[in-house]
Each structure stands twice: as C-alpha cells, then as structure tokens.
Image (cartoon, rainbow, N blue to C red; front, side, top):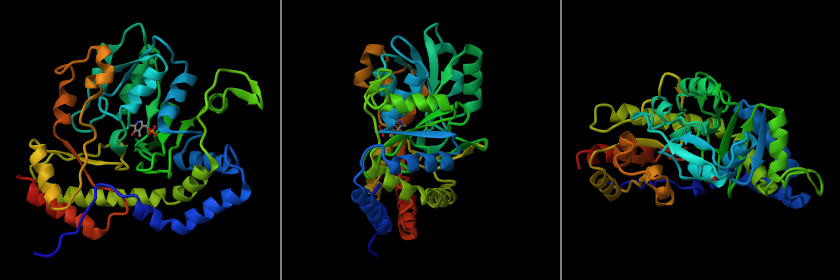
Length: 371
Ligand SMILES: *Cc1c(COP(=O)(O)O)cnc(C)c1O
C-alpha cells in the first residue's frame, strides 16, 4: 500500500508560508511607522473591506463577537429585549445578544442548510421581540427574503451574523445588504482571517457607521470628549495591515474553496452520506463543508485511521448549552437541530489543501462511509 497523504482538519502554517513575503512587508510598514491603534492601516482596511464586501461602510472592531454586540447595540437592542436567532451556531452569536442584557430566543433550523428556518420564527414572536439575527452558517447564506418579510410585518430589526460568510451572496446581493448591517469575524480560521483577533461591522447607513466608530472607541466624539457610553473594541494596525494583504487573496481563496466543494459533490453523489446543497438563492463560500452520517463516531474514527482530520460544528445546540439552562431549553424542544447535531461532520475544505490532499479525503470518505 502506498503511503497515505495526511490531511489535518485545518492548518494555518501553509497560509502564512504562501503569503509570508507580503505579510513581512506589511508588518515592517507598521513597525517603521510606529502607529499601532486606529492608524492609517485601519482606515485603509475599512475602505478596502467595504468595497470588497459591497457595503457602504465597514467599521473594524476587536473581534466578531464585539461586531455583533455593537451592531445590535447601535440598532437599539438592550436589556429585556428578545432576539430570535439560530440554535446552530458558534455560541458567540447568542452570547453577543446576552451581553447586552437581551435574551436569545432559538428557532429551529432548515435540515438541509442548517440555517434558521424562517417558518419557525412566527410562533416565537412576543411583545418583547425586537430583532431577528440569522447566521449565515458554514458560509451559506440564510434564506433572507422570508426573514425580512417577517421583520417588516412585525416591525423587527434584522442583524446578520456573517462571521462565516465573507463574500457570500443571497440572490446576487452580498451578505449584509438586505438587513443593512452585518457582523464579520477575522478569527484566524475564518475565510478572511487575521493572525490574531479581529472583526468588523458592515453597515449601509453612514450615520450608524459614525456612531459605531464612537462606540468602539470609548464613545469619544473627539479626543477625551466622551459623548456616549462606549467600550474599547479596536482593531490594531498590525492586524489591519495583515488583513489588507489577505483581502487581495480572498476571491481566489473562495474560488478554491468552491472548487474543492465541487470535487466533493461529484465524488460523494450517491454515497449514503447527507451532503450540503447550495440553494438556488445562494452563492456559498464554503467556510466549512459539513456532511451528515447516521453513525458519526464510526465514520469519524475510520477517517482518522486514514489520516483525515474532521471536526464537529457544532456538537451541542445552543438551547442545550449549560450557560443557557436558565432559559429552560430542553431536549426535544428543537427536533431538527437536535437530530442534526448528532450526525454532522466537517471535512477539510481550506484553500491551501493540495489536489492530492483533496483526493485523499475523497478516497478516505469512500472507504469509511460504510464503517
Ligand atoms: C467566529 C464566529 C463568531 C465570533 O467571532 P469571534 O471573532 O471569534 O469573536 C460569531 N458567530 C459565528 C457564526 C462565528 O463563526
């Protein structure tokens, strides 16, 4: 037997290596200038990001969680408000709601896209409901039209969690376009990832952008004049300089993610494996490639034995998280997400995978699927 090609679930070193010279120049530029916070790199990055994402403005912050907190806050969400969101996400989505003293209310998910199912929202609306926060999970946009419809009918705010969906499109519109406000994360493994923490809010209303720039910097309108109660959530110039370099490569990396996904679709069609499906309204960016297997533990073990790393996004729906026990969620409440959470497996899909590695994943999946 020939030696197998190992495929770690994710690896950042190849990305650093691929862009090392440009990154070194960017870091040197910041060091030589000696301006490290809210400097020219941050200003330039915000303009370039907004333009690349089809948004009017981008306001950078310290991480994706803060992007969601500040987006909700600037739209007026606060203590006692209820925000309907997805139970299948990084817990940070819901934690952003909780951080404002508001209460996350979990719908159920669509069994194919794993995004918030719009048909589960209506029954959750109460006089305290103020907002809906869909999550474009795995890089596949949530079904925004019905969500915007419900929001319009009930006078609700919509904030998009686009932390996994840089550059994704819904019916040709970039994420953030329909709601007018979206949070992005630049956590290192995200499609656009810094070499540290970072985040941004995409926003179409320049007045809101101005207010967000105040909020992230202590509420200052000018130096040492604090107009509103802000916080400290700033992107630093080092990360901004690195992100500017990586932003140039995002389109090519998204194309590579889509190409890998296409190879998986072709190879896995007909296997007893639940596959993601790109919906007619969507242009997905494949932050993750998530399949479903009814005997997941055996499938994962067989893949591991063949050198293929996997991960689970996410093993515990948010209504069942210990931190949310006080909300009273219990098993059986959200049947679609609970069943899916036991079957989902994420396969490697990062753009630095070689063709040989993609081939190794395909071979290993074919051999492991009946494990
Ligand atoms: C990563 C992520 C967040 C949080 O972003 P951080 O930068 O880690 O704070 C929020 N929501 C989703 C869906 C994410 O994937």
